[in-house]
Image 1: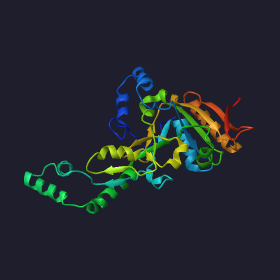
Image 2: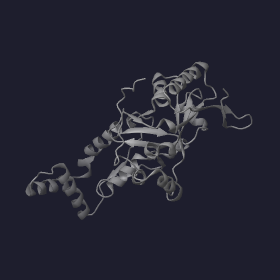
Image 3: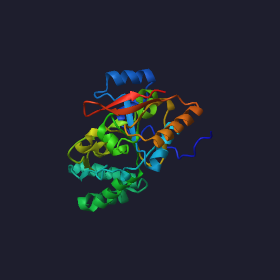
Image 4: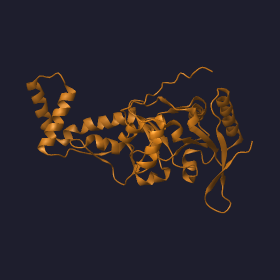
Length: 301
């Protein structure tokens, strides 16, 4: 079978990732495990989950891409169901010295070949601007981030009733389990979302890059049930991120999965086996007979 002609996403060592993750990627596997266990204040969850619906053609294609081709499609935040995705409260707070340093850095960045006089004139023009003057520029920059950043979102559990209802066709779809340690080079980039009732503050004068980091991984607490982790790569929207086939460990069918969908899934598993990828354990979600919760049981061949 020939390799798919997917536009492949590249994960740069200094892309939109947590600095701790960048350090992790410089270590060998044994050292990474030691750091994961000993030094991370909030250890990364060992497993990541992804839900897929059963009644949409593009979801079928994305599911097959993961199972058979071992690629993750990176989607832009502008397509997400949360209208507040990657929004921020933007400020221009700082002392005169901090403003001058920020605008001098910006002027040199924008026009590195300007002479001294022209550079000083540009800096003074920036210094005289008001927050309202810069607002259109900020709005366009954030719009670009929302449209061009490639994001892959994971959930934190395979037993969340709401996740099955919202993202897996009312329990008719499927949930995949990934084991992070089996492909740390890719899956250690999945950073947990932070839930906060207020929009992140993005101060354009001081701490701007730290504010960008807060914005990329912030959501309102109403989404906390998802326990989301996400991989972000700027400029990679619509591209595909390859991962090690060995990292996909389980496939869990919903408690209402229909025969036609189960047959399609079985076909993709057969394709996967035919190209020599490791087998995946198959499970079914079931309703607990006495409690409002789901249980997961292995499928008997």
